[in-house]
Figure 1 (tube, rainbow, N blue to C red):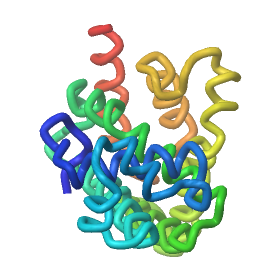
Figure 2: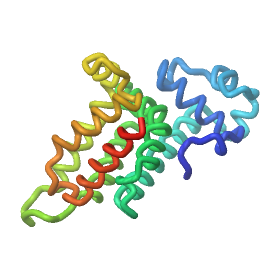
Figure 3: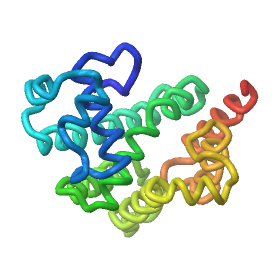
Length: 208
């Protein structure tokens, strides 16, 4: 599944994007099919045609977010993509709406929140290296790293205030990106990947 882009703005994608935005802004319970239709510029009937019920639409949003995260994690660990400013910029452009949706879902405790968290732990565990002791509890590391990253997502407004800049703006993303690299031990994800990420952030900063 592709990340959100101009080319992806079919009626179905517009409905999905509108739903994620409204679910993030006001929660699933307060969001109506009519409101989603108005935000997407379509009829309520078309929303029901593509997704059925609001709950089915929420499930589709969950699946889209998880697919996006899995694809970006995979892409980030191949072909030296983390060194490429264009890759980082694409993630920074496409990720915020999805992360805001995910953060709200976790705070509200939506029906899919537990499943999403568990799947994100699985994705994180798969990305961890096995460079250290065989006795290392990789599952615990993955769970803690996932919780730390999601904490930034859930608290993005507070993090932005503390930094004095929008977390999802290029300057904010640079600062938090570097801070994450400082906090994560290289053996967790591999020293080479950490250095690639530092190089990519430096190149992106030079272009701004």
